[in-house]
Length: 147
Image (cartoon, rainbow, N blue to C red; front, top):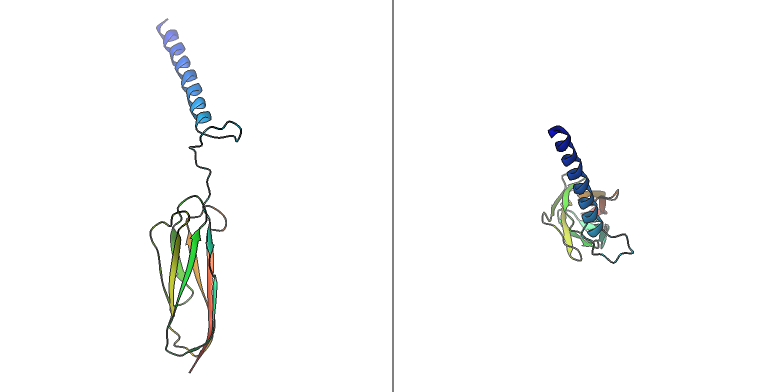
């Protein structure tokens, strides 16, 4: 008898816990028709680059060129630059480690050393916290180093 009473009590508790959970889920998510406040997160993160490629034309040898790539967080969530890599050691870079809030701008600063004569085509690969297939960006800088 005690086992039966315990089992019934357990089943009733699970039933009420499940129903309460479903009610809270309905309360805090929106189906678009209820007018309820959405507290669950279906928001997206996205960024827009001001420029993704710089063409310097002819630049003088041994005169480093600094470039700043600027982006705006056009999404609804903070965005992080998780990593950035230059295609060669001739391009040094710095990037913001703190989150870029929605509507705010961030930047990646690069310095091309311009030591080698001739045409150059360099890339900076930027990895972000975006949760989309487009979470990696390729920035370019190119030109021609002359004496």
